[in-house]
Length: 180
Image (cartoon, rainbow, N blue to C red):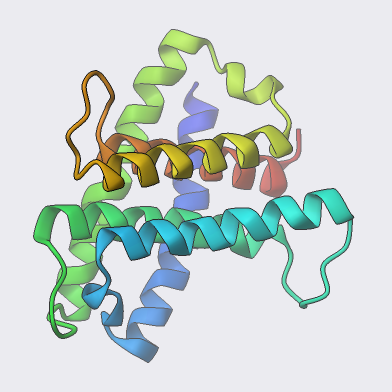
């Protein structure tokens, strides 16, 4: 399991690096997004991955790897937005945004390690296409919870679904980066 922790940290480092570069270029423009818009942005990325998996070819010069990175980063943005609420302006500087990013990346790692212990790394035997389907399922669950304004009877909240989406995307990135 130590290898999994190191692989997770390596992949999150790749995602964080892109997040930091986009923060430099765009600032924290994502702060204006309501959580439902973040969910829809993740949907666009997951849907594109599935489309490429089914068709076997991408017409735009970016493959599934960049989309899984986007899911990780938007999942973390979603968690930040759930905590802070959306803003009317980009109200976070790079340092604050990266501190929040690191907080939720660490939380995702801790959740993954706990689940990995209980499930004995079952994710390693799964196909990347299954991660895509599970992310899409989590998106549809999240949309339903959002349409219920969070008033569920027995289900986990939006935050738990974002965490799962992040971790499934990390698993896909680990397989893409390190192989089966």
